[in-house]
Length: 85
Image (cartoon, rainbow, N blue to C red; front, top):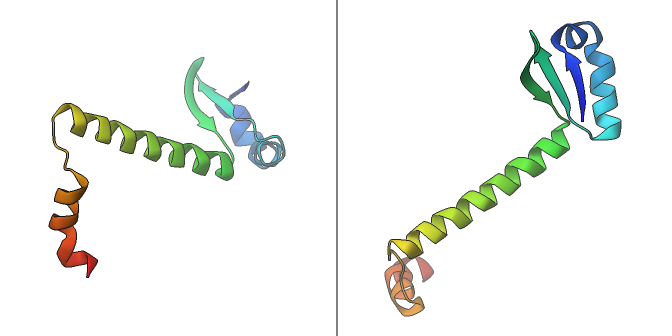
């Protein structure tokens, strides 16, 4: 992964955006020598947020199992019967 200064981003934003679109490789932006932000293409960002949503759903399901907040298929079908008609 490449690292660029925030001043480079200010001066060459169009060039950096073109490079990201082509290479699909994020760029770490630093400010005062410290990491400040990542610059990523839209497709990669969307894919990342989709993955995070899926993992959060799995984590919620695992917590529900641990806390015994689950139903059998029969119980779930009964509770949802008014919406399944």
